[in-house]
Image (cartoon, rainbow, N blue to C red; front, side):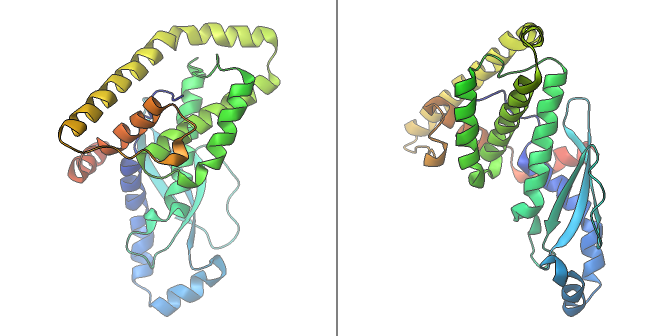
Length: 251
């Protein structure tokens, strides 16, 4: 099963991260390679950073800021994540040690915002099925890259939040949560059904042109239609220039 798609996309978040990292990269760009390597040797030649994320009300990411630390990292705060990146590589954020923590942080924040509004999308899933899904997502975690992986990170965050809620709530609280979620049930279903129709039409069009869609076996714990939706989300993103202009217009 899938939940409604994420508001943000990994490509857009990567652009935000690149902008946040630019001042740090300029600092190291003024050093010699040996100076930079001596400074970063105890951090395995990665720049350790604490990041902060600001969101619009829609939960689209408004701004990402990064601050490097050379001593111990600051205490964890709201909207803060830790990451590290390699200034010796041209496309350093492709290293998931930099982009991965941001994706995970944003996914968790978006799911929490939905839940705070009363939209608990997995409230009707039985405990046993929820546990099975949590195990499958943990096993597939190494493949959480690209747009499809970000969708699964969102699903994993929703599963985790639902399990946490069930551990501490009473029967009455569960009933209240279920009642609040009913307001969103039809909207969630409509969004998922429309996306499934669009994904099926997209696949039919590709087949008419003589091409097909590869569905990675690691996502085999999902229904085939949901695997197709993941592929559809990943392969129908705007081109790079459009993504860049969209990111700049939010600043």
